[in-house]
Image 1 (tube, helix red, strand yellow):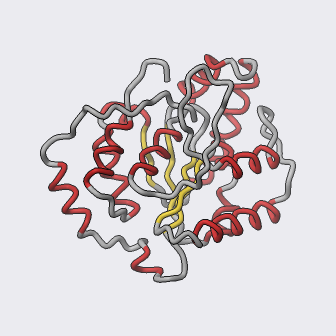
Image 2: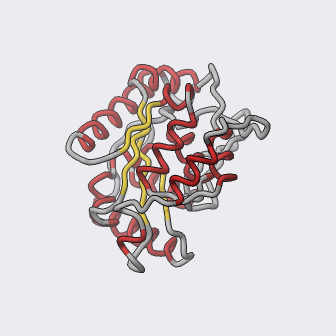
Length: 245
């Protein structure tokens, strides 16, 4: 979840960026708000294990203009500050529904569905055309989200090989090695099962680090976003590869 990234302003994309921008300004995506009209915004959930790149994906979406539900959660225990781009209020709710690191259920699905529905409706009152949510514990909530947000919602899978995600979490020393591995395997099982028969866009962590521009374009295309050129530049420059991730 906590990919170490920072915003570097002086890196510029290739000259084809303006052409891409013009192209996607003309795109009318079949699941955009042009289809759903005034009923609701495009609803987006980012699912991914801890240390899978989900924070990086959420950061890209934020820079592209997606409402990710601020104010955002901040881990004051981290040695270096960075945004996780996950709703602080929803993060707290999720941690009351599922224990960490045991990943055991404490609240029934019916209540989770009611909370998800109320949260998205509150966000839509702000007039956002695209609204997203991200948290590792959402890996356990795929069916809840579908029931609360409807079948037209869009899913992004922040994907990283399981062993890599486990090793990265272990290095953080949040929990013991055994508990870190157990939590990651539980989330992996739930996520792979849910996405086995559910349309989604998979964003590979390694591919995102190697070529963030390509993944930004894929996200714009899949979600039917309409970012400005400055937003596209910010989203691309937001991703900074690091050996510590």
